[in-house]
View (tube, rainbow, N blue to C red):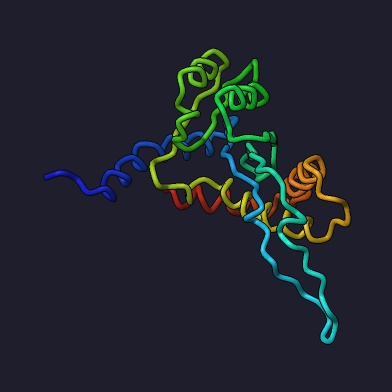
Length: 203
């Protein structure tokens, strides 16, 4: 009898998560990594104003921008250790450049990430192997176990707020600055709590 999809996922989790837990508890150099897209779909036409006032609602065309891809890494304390912006979907060379910023010459670096085809490409695996980077691939359909997903949720809420508040014309450079600001202006304590929750969930 063939195992169900849920059973297959559970088996993958049982193979992967003990390694993540051990790496975390032994205080090794562990980063949680993923990508996210910032698009005009993030903008919702919602506005709050004083009773009796007439709100000004920007049309989506007035704040339209080309999609921006964000690659980010957080550490065990929920701090953003690296963030890289690209004006297109993430390609192999983008991800290699990102890993190059995470590597350490004197100790192993552990990277917990999903199964995106770019992550599993030969060029990425070869670069990782040559630079003491250990790639730990998450189980399929298990993104809730990667705490960086919480970071992206918080960042995108912050980005929507910045987008509405900024009086500047929304050029692509301004949008990039707001995306980066949405990442750098965060309090890492809430993210750290989520890191601990994800590790507890793996046990």
